[in-house]
Length: 370
Ligand SMILES: NC(=O)c1ccc[n+]([C@@H]2O[C@H](COP(=O)([O-])OP(=O)(O)OC[C@H]3O[C@@H](n4cnc5c(N)ncnc54)[C@H](O)[C@@H]3O)[C@@H](O)[C@H]2O)c1
Image (cartoon, rainbow, N blue to C red; front, side, top):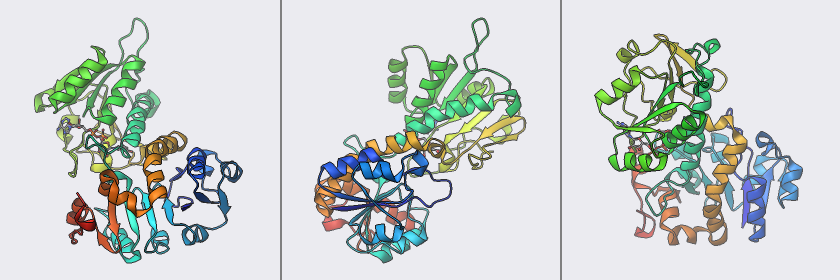
């Protein structure tokens, strides 16, 4: 198959659909890979590195779209990109179609076969192509918290781990899923005093076993959240209710009872945020203050570390991408997890949840779609 990797054109996006290492895997499996010049700049991979990995380099996105059977990207296609897609072409990328009717219309008009990373599943019903970015964001949340806690940044002037003879910072993680566990792990590793709050008892049991006493766990009630948040130096917001906006676990009124210079890191901001006072920020201006509490609410945290993020993403997408390259659309029909990833095919929406969100008709592929 001819596989194309255009340069990402969304503002502040530095990741790349295929790393040079992934290109080698496609080439070793007998496929041709065409990469747009400069596509790897954000991760420090030059055109020559891609050439050595076996790719051909094209001067224009137009060539890449025109001559590829499958396009592998990171972010949802922008208008100039979806206008170049065509029927029988496979698009494999993050789409987030539900809140984006304009993109949905563009993809449907193109007739392409669009597989969204965020709806591909695994045998346990999880979302394996979302998890790596949650891992990155969870770990990064602690670095962000450490920086925001500094006096010069408006924080309390605390070192997360303290030093011998001085107590460490108190850190609360709301939501002990993928983001929450990675955040707890990093914070505990630095020596902070960590509590994870979740509303799933089985998950709290797992975390309790895993951290073997190094991290405290609490069941999520209004009282538990208040107790912990009022005594915290840092609160990491990492809750997710699939398909819904994040619940507002910390209200504006609660800020008044928090420590001055405490830090809120709202990783769940991409789902609306779990603090009432959160609004999305960017890497160039990541924090703001409300009632003396520092807020960090960057909506695309993994974008800060495109080298790590691109590799983590490629590790997860590679097996699915190779299946698609080896078998074409037949891979979607054979593999139920890829089929869950299929969002649009020949002008129809093929994922039930996406169709419902967009108010469009759901068209199961060959009667097989989940
Ligand atoms: N800002 C970013 O750049 C970025 C990057 C990656 C992920 N995210 C977001 O981070 C959030 C968490 O993602 P995840 O992969 O860890 O999800 P996850 O499903 O693995 O974990 C979410 C956890 O929240 C818990 N939860 C739900 N409601 C709760 C409540 N009321 N009280 C306490 N716990 C509750 C669930 O039981 C679950 O354990 C999502 O909104 C995701 O989109 C943001």
